Image (tube, rainbow, N blue to C red):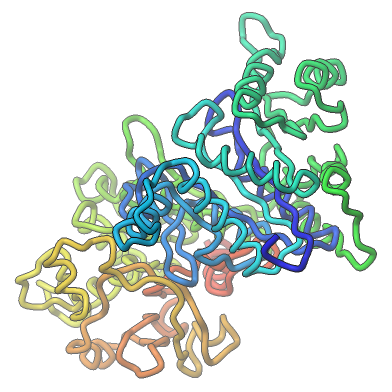
Length: 552
């Protein structure tokens, strides 16, 4: 092994079909193992050839989750961070594109000394090296690797092969868990195990035998089907874990522990729970709050990535939605979230006066011109009617534009993203990024990752955080134009958070005496919200919305 510590590895694969919840299952397993006293680091493997998730369309791939380092990743990384209360690093994420690019670049630089470079062993060796490096970097007891896709996809075969080789080298330190699906055909009304049996046989054809099967289904598994799966798939009945559909993903760790999954995994890895371990009390308290709160707080989320055919794609704003839930439950309220398409306000299909029915309004991040004028109408209505408003990234930039237009009097105020030749670009691209865009390098042209900010005394933001300096994650190309900052301040807008050198505007707000909550952040606070530790700005927004609800 590459470290003195006897490190263990768990590989989580999928069977039967995609979308059965491997990410939530892996996150829940990580949380449970942590609660038993072990240091766990998760890794997400995405088999696509994109180098990262940064250039992917949110309506196709879902949210892009950003790490402190600035790496743009799959939204499952957000699940790991939220469930396990960890901040992940570049070592914890890999795509086929990353692996192939590294190997090809190395070959071009004679890193293989003129040898014939092939998928096996060179690609699989690079995969293994990254897994071992992540374990060593974190000095973890257990490394939890989720392999994206489904068994049988040729895209993820090399990752499974790398895991197989690691198992051969360290048979007592590696285990495989398959998250499979058991359908209940409507015409039959009976839960069928055969698709899972076939998925296991397909995994066997790769030379891999699962040590545990997490059986997803509409209903809980009965003992008979557990026995049937165990017999057909050559595992113990206790290693078949029932995972029925539930109302909340946060119930998953609780349900898993009903089947004693934590101790079963530890036994398979030749480990014992540690006496000093914390239990799941904090998590259970959060889950209980979710189920017992009765007061509702109605929040409208006005975005542009919701429309995809006849469906609403809320995954594009997954972290925002979860952050709202955490703060609402923490504040003793049940969040009732409504997704509103900004284009409907733009085209007149929806009237801004309908927003009076909501206790709070959020405009999340996004890119491009689509739906912008609709969002500006929403922001103006929220400001004038004193409805709590929270703008995230683009939502803050539009807050500044709306204020410049309707308070400062710059009717043509806009962002350089929409009107690059406009006269009053109160939001414009960072000079350092212009050259990159001119060269077509969109994948490396943003301000990404964690940056510090200094908060002004006596502001809404400073009161919410309870700190003078913060660190938050960014993902954007444009900033508030410094040429307009003083004019905006004179007109009453407060820039309550700035970069330490005072050049970049990080938070804009109106004083509490003028508006119950009217605030926007250039960064994405949702990336740091956690179930047990909600984000302070989301909590401040929710509390303002609850007050507004009581007044109405």
